[in-house]
Image (cartoon, rainbow, N blue to C red; front, side):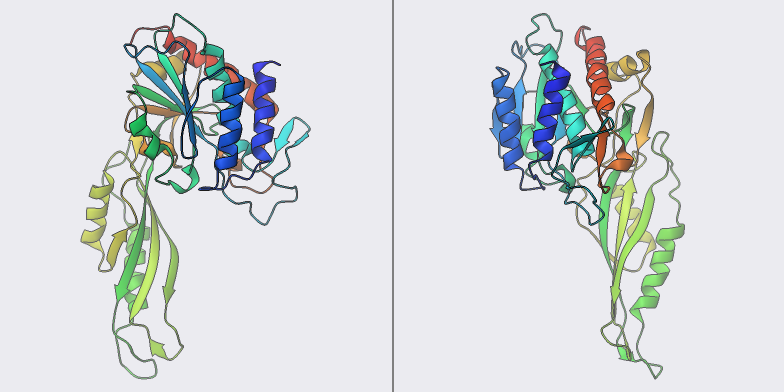
Length: 354
């Protein structure tokens, strides 16, 4: 079988094996068995599977090839069986086919292409990781301390094989506006909903002074709200949730400080660890991409890049617009082209001295 055929067969097995975040042990087994069948010595931490190229040399720079094998749960709009790998009209349907099964198997195929090479200027590590869809602590974050020194990473996500050289971070804010309860029929109390409305309007209207060259402005969206428990009582509390997509113009902590300066509601981030990321346009991997005609852009969506502490790019076959959609699919031609482009991109870097 060709590397493309092996990749498609592996992807079909992954599609047909449920792998919701924190429940990926069966797909981890599949990936590990596949690599072992190719003569590769694997290592595993929880549901994260990784391997080094056959002639790994710790004196050389190391490139991490990373993608995830967990999925979200299928939504109610599916007309196909989400766990059936349905191949039709040049497309492969199924949950996780596009996000991120296609990028994962294409990276695995590229790793296999270079695995036995003896005269590489860089090492390769392939890592199929868990819990990306929930930014879980038992995914890439738990694996990184176990890996050898990494110089940069290629993160496999569906980007139409364009190269994301920057990615927005994420903070989810739990906000609470507090007032005073009273009877709705009388001039009593202090309505927490009205206080929340003022802050929500600020989130909607405010523009941060600094705008990122690659990622644009910080984006804030109020996405949930809850208040009151009966019609005739002025609510003393109104809770709302704000989704904040941060940029490299501000750290998450700086963004949070600015928000707290401007709103009266209590603001508590669920986490500040999902930071924006970026890589210099002068980095060898970016230059290599530009040399072979790959377009670059700043990504508004989050990936494991947010948890990777060294330079990285995000690139892969498939289309981010299909991710988490009903009847998810990836084109077979996209996977084939993705494998070849990964190999071409790595060839430009892996034979150059850093």
